[in-house]
Image (spheres, rainbow, N blue to C red):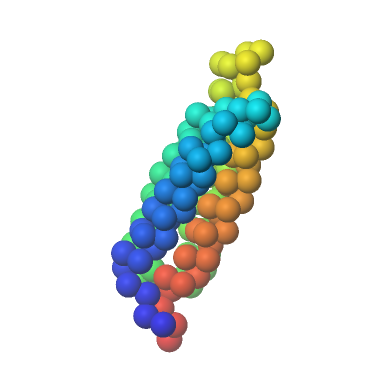
Length: 130
């Protein structure tokens, strides 16, 4: 299967749209469980941007003759994404005070796992087989 350069952009954008659509569609139900949909939307946006940028850097790194460079790029991007999301969660928890939504933080953690799975899967498909 030949992987076109922009194919991963549609997959990640599709994931972003699906998660955004689900959070809008289930807004009332999520509010009943004290889950702030704006926090979920923020986590979704942060993860989308970090995944997009990381895949963009990996796409440029594919021509590196060192085969472990791609793996290092995937691991570094995943680690960096984890720190960005953790920093955003800590800032939110401090800024929100008593009105914070812990369930939305857990939803953001779930989104981190989903975006990381997509990113690794796409990264493995980007590398041309010889």
